[in-house]
Structures are given as structure tokens and as C-alpha cells.
Length: 244
Image 1: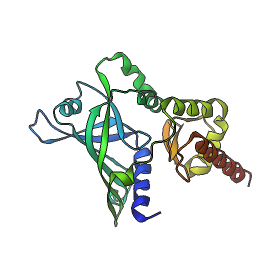
Image 2: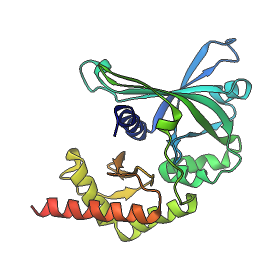
Image 3: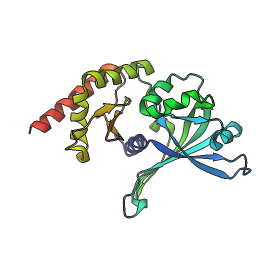
Image 4: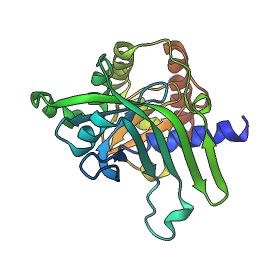
């Protein structure tokens, strides 16, 4: 894997480990000044940005006039110099999502957003990523192009993804816990509930202790069969490690 592709994958993991982004739009009220806000977001399977906002939100009003958008996420430092930690800015053009099939996947990630369904002014948007700026720390600075950022479209749809997630939660919740404890040292002794909340070609999210944790696959998966093989291997590795 060359350096640029490696940086693109690191950037995707950084994005996946954040549930909220700073959204910067072009202000209608302030006549073109940049305007920052925050919003939950998720990535599509390929890597486009999906978010769910009210029409009355300032950033939605701005996008209805000028659809240029950037989002920024970062690895927040608990102490020390924030500049030594990763940060990522994605820019592109936002549009309404006419096909809301991604909505069910969004609600799987953010179940609290289901309450907004009764508020008729909430809509799904997608930003088609055009420029990617990733800084992984001092000396790790990249402009990444969309071909390096985006993944191949998987051979499954939103309904298939939801089925895979439900299957893991209904029949293999123990495997989710094993994988989490094996992959993340801070959860090594965690005994609470672990649930899967997403599936991507390059990994999946687990929910534990009210936190969302992204677990990358070793290799990208294009088919559901490849996902299954990766999950079986990760479970096997986790069991062997726990028994050692």
C-alpha cells in the first residue's frame, strides 16, 4: 500500500471515529462570510458525507443558496498539543438526498434521530466529496483526491447492510464483545452490552458504554460473503487471544 492510499485509509478511520463534524457553509445572512456549525454525520459505503438537518437550521438555509460545504473532524487531545493529533477536512457540494434508503442506516447509527421524523422540516443531505485535506500529525500532511478517498461500491444495498447488522446483534452479540475487547485495549475488561451499528466495506461500528467505536477490516470487502469471512476471522482471533 503506497503512502497516499495509507493516508487516505487513516483519514477514513479518523472520520469513522467521529460522530459529529464542524460544518462550514457560506453565510446567506452575513453575505459570504464562512459560518461554522456542528452536526452528526455518517459516511456512505463509498465515502460520501450524509447528514440529517432541519430546514430552519442556519447551515441548511445557507446550503439552499450556495451548496458549497466543508466538514472538519479531529482527534481531540485529552492533554498536550492538539496539533500533534489528526484532523481532516472534506469539501464538496451538498444536495438533497431524494433516495432516502440511507436513512435507515443513519437511524441505526443515530437512533435518537428517529424522534425528528415527526418534525417534517428535517431532510437528508449528501455532500459529494471533491477535496480531502488530511493532517495526521507533524510531517503527515496530504491533499488526497477522491479516487484515493472513495471505496468501490459494495455488492450490497442498505437493506442488506441492515440485515447483516441485525444478524450480528441477534445471533452473534458475543462475537461483537469478543472483537471489541480484542481490538481495543480500553475495553479489555468491559463486560457490558456491545451492539453493531454499521457495516462498511472497510469496517464496522460497535456501540459500547454509550460510545461508538469503528473497527477496521484487514482488507476491504466488496461482497457480504467477504464481510462474513472477515468477521469469522476476527472472532476466531479474539477467542484465541482471550484463551491465551
